[in-house]
Image 1: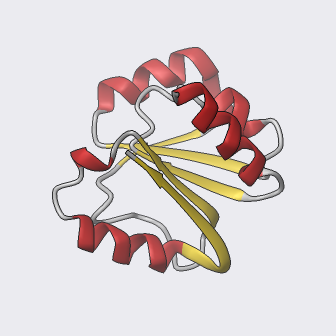
Image 2: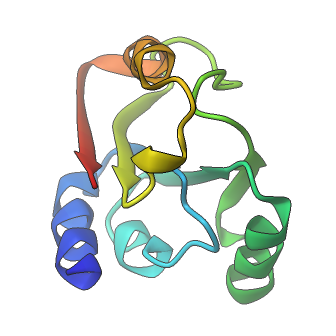
Length: 113
């Protein structure tokens, strides 16, 4: 299932600035980045981000963050993904407010649990 979700997300990512919340070690970055304009992965677990950085090098931006307080300017992304990670978010309502804030006016979100 996760493979199908990342393939779908990769189609949505074409030409877009992408933020994946709860990216872990970046399992889907290879697929998403093929057509994305840029990819930022965020996760609260530093160790997972380090593993992703070891695998992908500097090809992607990795940020230690919580979905409830995204450290990005308004309208910074065209696509925000959260795949298989929403259950880690402590305050979903606040996280959704943050996603709306960082999403460009014509942006798209994909949340799958």
